[in-house]
Length: 130
Image 1 (tube, rainbow, N blue to C red):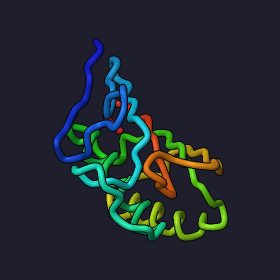
Image 2: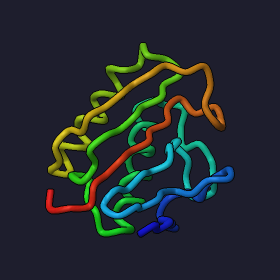
Image 3: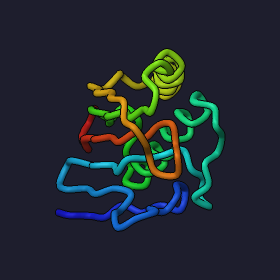
Image 4: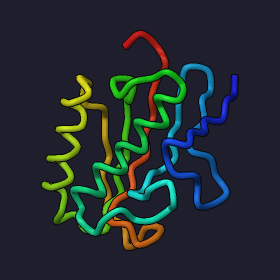
């Protein structure tokens, strides 16, 4: 089973890709930058950008009936690793507020992100009885 995920609750892709793909029990979420449904960066604050990127992911997985607890892996791309403490604070609270376990995670610094975002987050979720 191959299912393209598309929700109006998160911004539409700004390039030739989809918000997410479900293949059998696996859900792959494309990298989400902190943009609203009008494709505008919501703030220059890393904490607000982190929160928005995570909310975009949540909206996408909820479209296929999943919850934050179904997320098993994230990858975070930051333009400045010196801001990791702020990112970690928002990230931790996001999973706690959603009664979810922390997933496996990778975090890397990159030189630039689309629309000059400070952060981009991608995720993998598994559809099962977690």
